[in-house]
Length: 486
Image (tube, rainbow, N blue to C red; front, top):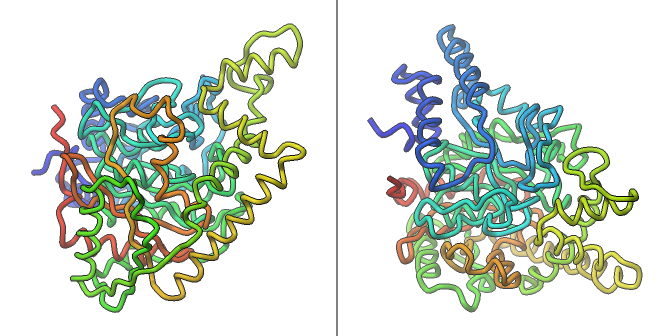
């Protein structure tokens, strides 16, 4: 039998249904794998073994009685540390939230628990999801299981690395400018950034409120569909949640691409892209054509403005969102002679350098005399970027692009060069600005490191993306490759 820690969600569910393994044994196997690999990977910030084993025992009892809650019942899953979990430390990778234990569950956690999933711990991330390498965590640097001298991507680097290292079969991440898709590509797994509003943001510690979206990460597209069936859907507690019915995502996995028109935007094959990344991406696109899809070259002319637009809007929203962290109500508190000095010391000591940098950028963009010149203009350009997608989706069903211009880079290579780090997300940022969904699947290797293909879809049409990604995985084996961890 395949090693348990190499299971996909579907394989684990099949083994549970057949009685080949119990949920308790499955959970114990993943806990043992975490203990064995964490010294190398450092993906988890907090483990909840007692609660996980209790949830696994409950799943086994339901299965014994014929009352299984569905395909996630008894399946261990890791949670990014920006998603609130009742009573479990949730720090957003920041010292300013050290020791914070939320008194409630995020909606996605409620839905996972209702589906019988077994949350096993909280995963490392860039502080407040600000970063592309998971080097900005206040607690530890997560490594890439394919080469532990390299980054796993970010900000959901812990979520991606945990799956790639076989520590859990699936995780939840968040994506503000590529933070699910870029680490999925760099770690050789699959990841879905849903349409803005498709998955509830209630209980998510906000970075950029008009950009953030929670989504699943796993080895296969079929696994992503299973998780989306559980977590997607309208939530009246979230004012940005769309009251739109959700389909059965697993029913969309037909394997049939005939008649689909796939756009290839010329702006996404950027100057400076590594040759191996471009070659693997173009080979994957050609494989889709061979399966019956029609390829159409298209243009998204305002793509070149996405990077500066994002780095005005996102920091501006971060400046507003992070103003609540003042050491008065919860989290870390520094001492000061006056209230204002206490707040200044708390933020100065509690926030890391990247968070402080983005708060200052955002505060400047929102300040009197600069609001119109920067923030208002950035919002106008955002409208043009969104219009580009609307126009191109009148011609094609989805787009296929690279995910990152490079493979995983060495730890420390870009941490002192913010612009070089920001360019890591040049292929993913426009999707968040437009609010559309995007899927990443592994599509090859360059210099021994994974490359990811990005598929971009119409708003609320995750089903088509999953259909195409699954069809690609039926004819390739990149998603079956595993890193050779000791």
